[in-house]
Length: 336
Picture 1 (cartoon, rainbow, N blue to C red):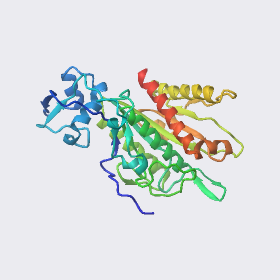
Picture 2 (tube, one colour; picture 1 turned 90 degrees about the horizontal axis):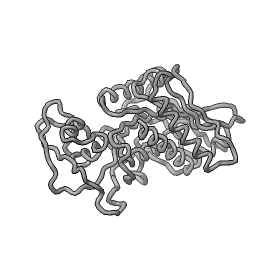
Picture 3 (cartoon, one colour; picture 1 turned 45 degrees about the vertical axis):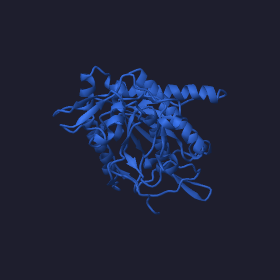
């Protein structure tokens, strides 16, 4: 398969940006040890609210999109800055090839998640496709569908101003609108590392990637979301369910917030049946046990069950799943 030309090192995190009126903006020269949070606080501004605005103004003058250069001047957002007019295209952010050509533009919906950092891990990848089964004569695999849902979730979070790191990446797939997603083995782990065959090595690699980034982003609001698709007997239909670490109050709240959102959505769209998804402690899982950010571990459904296959195979359903998860994330952030 021919690989599309992407930006594997620079396009590793994303955020939604705004269009600003440029007149009369204050500037400040960064000193040694200054960070974006420090500068904003010095100007009496809430870093969580104005973080993405600051980056939008200064993106060409930041190292790795988030670090200040000592001695360089930076513009401070106007506290009254808003999107100019109501033209939706003015709130659009281009240049996210990880989402694929058709989905590379992100339209800003709000700044509700400004200052928040999310690490997104889709299960398996590389030499390990995860759970597999046949749909007709075609092989379908867990990693392809978990990845597509993860990308859709990432785009939703970015549209609300979040900083998003896609940890398991496939630089030539993007968001796909097909029912049957081709199985491949070219996924890599942040920043661009080959995923090892050994299971423990694979898990440790993604744990290290998240924990390193967590320490780099110390002081910011950080969460991890892991997405998997289960494999059970053909006849077992399961609802979306969630895991968290037993000692993590924030992780439990995140999982519970998404769970509440799914319960509400099922009640609205499928009132004739009960939603049986749960959120449970699974502290023994390697990713749950060893990652530093508070996290929610999501199982989307049973890849072998016909009803659950409809949940993941239909692209509109994958989009709905991502949207519902993002709304649960918003609920969690609002209640922080």
